[in-house]
Image 1: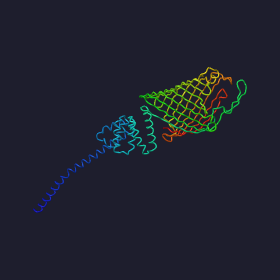
Image 2: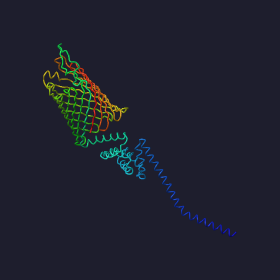
Image 3: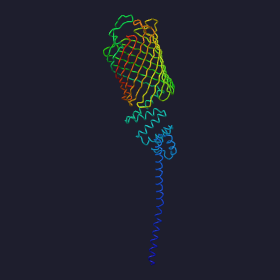
Image 4: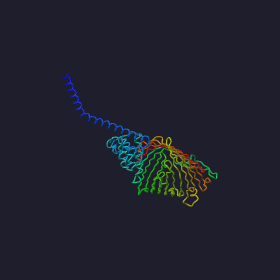
Length: 464
């Protein structure tokens, strides 16, 4: 019995020693478990508030998302997912610097994340750091992103170029070539036999009646703008056009146009004033020269409505018929309105009026020139896709002459009407293909001035 009790006591003592020895390991293990559990709880908590921030931002509540992110900034700053949504919400709620810094941190860890790079470029754009914005946008374009992303970047790039024009000298150029058909290359009447006001018959030559022909054309233009200070810039434009007919070279027409002046701008409007010189050649001879003072104004009422106005005083000098030399004065106004519906139509219209007076004090000159002019234009442009647009325009102009025609023995009154349809397809940012169909008619009390004309053509244009 004594031996059994001694054995039992020995076993108890050994068990106590083992428990005591295991307690040395139990304490650090318990601390490790507690720390692990605490870390897991913190991770879950962090995941919860980052998830809440993302939900607020995706729901269109960037200010609320930014406020929540600010509360957790010290504990979560440096976590890429947190920095991403913190950056987005900061930018969209007006805290541009903080947003850009956050996205820059994300990009350091994820240099190939082009979604982050796009948002960072947008932040630079809003900060008006256009060189850095262009650099980041270009890096994304170099990866050949989806077409929709390219189009969005192109829109940002266009705005950057437009805004930079207010700070540095800009040059724009374009080249265009085309071909088409003209049913009345010389705007002549369709018949050759007439009866004068005194009852006597007479005829006009075949070259004066309507002549159909095919044509080729080319054009070049360049414009330079040089800012002198914010809101004030000088400009200069040069343009040339040439239309060559296949079988009737005597009707070929070439023009050279030079303009220069100044531009005043503010947040809502623009005033452009300048001088213009234009030289027109028909066949192989100089036909007409124009020297004019031009002005036009645009005023943005809101983000969808713009008012326009223009005025011109011009000296018309005809090289082949001095009796037609004249002074011309025109002025008008209109509007443009964008509608936020399918195809985003832009409706535009304008009214104008003016006078033309002979520079020579002779009856013949006054009969040919002196008139009052009234006109009206209306049209719309439809954006069918990001690359395809259509426009429809109708125009009406009335001319009422002051002096009686010496052949038909009555005053001349003309009503000019024009209808046009144009399509433009943007192949690339700099390349575009155009197609146009025009119908014009001039109804007149003087029979030899009546004519009808249809033109159809296509063009390819490169803008630089």
